[in-house]
Length: 126
Image 1 (tube, rainbow, N blue to C red):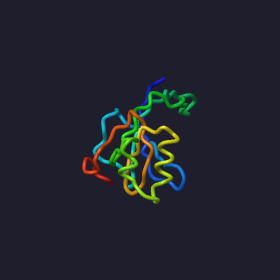
Image 2 (cartoon, one colour; image 1 turned 90 degrees about the vertical axis):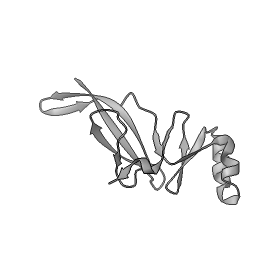
Image 3 (cartoon, rainbow, N blue to C red; image 1 turned 60 degrees about the horizontal axis):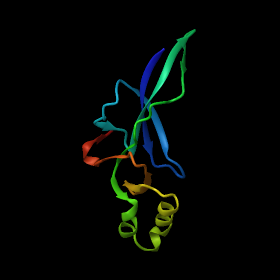
Image 4 (cartoon, one colour; image 1 turned 120 degrees about the vertical axis):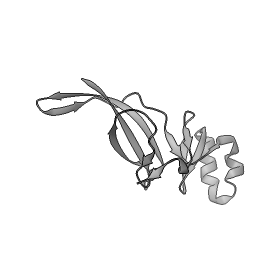
């Protein structure tokens, strides 16, 4: 069996995030990301070949999510997102006891405490 590393690219979706997964050599932060990608994370999986078929274990050892955007901590959300337009966002952050939110290309995503924030100009989108 071999321990294989993957990167999951996250994209805005209609109700939930869309994603694509790619095998990579290591967990080095990529310089190029697919167009539309707003976040990514790494994970590992055990793989074994049997009778010409690749068998994969469950994903494990997930990295923190790396977002391309601007982090706003929960305590700052009311000031950063005032008015009726963001009332639901403020309510969700408060009710879910969120760490904060990340504004990524016109979308707002819930941020976990271990979130890693990057600026868009750190990457080339292909």
